[in-house]
Length: 264
Image 1 (cartoon, rainbow, N blue to C red):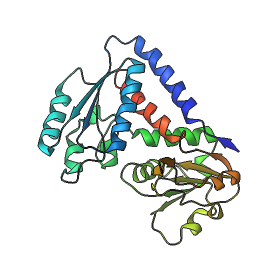
Image 2: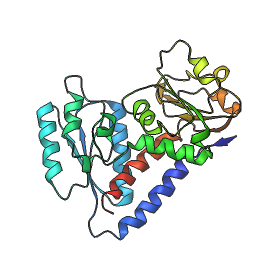
Image 3: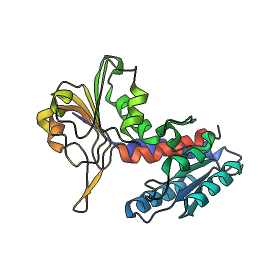
């Protein structure tokens, strides 16, 4: 059994990016738009700010409340040469039309891949999908020979990774988190990717021995972070990503990798 060390992978990626930035004549600038008061979102923003500081990347945060002022700010940032990439921290408050906000982002500055998530043209894949692909690469799996079950078809993870993997695998199963016959769709899967946000919903009785487990779901339970996949599954797996310390750290690194790709 191999445990994916997301923190090490993150540090390796960030170390490489830091070396690249030293040679740039222009300092990258990440613009982040946030319209909520969501505590978890604020934590994510702070973690990105810390990484930006480590990499010597400019970090500009805009806290905006109304839909039109958000769109106006995005259009302004699109036109500013000094802004390398733009990301909107989700979730937005309920009165905001998410698609209209995302559509305002220039495809060339959409380093969080939100346009891809919305089915719009983008120069970038979402960082979480890149983190999942990195984990699969580390597992040694041959996608073309694999049966893959993706549990959860959400906007940010399940749906985009499904579209990316379509046509690359032997058998792709797209599973909604509320499906009644979940075990029938996972029990013989070579790779299970879960992104439901339902703590420990994948139990050991619905996975086979030798499975590869990619956990992209995170839920806070009693002050502790839990993944979608129960830890009892690990003993049956040949490779798994833990929560915390798996897909999450690599996702942050991939955001900045997208940002740096803009300046190459």
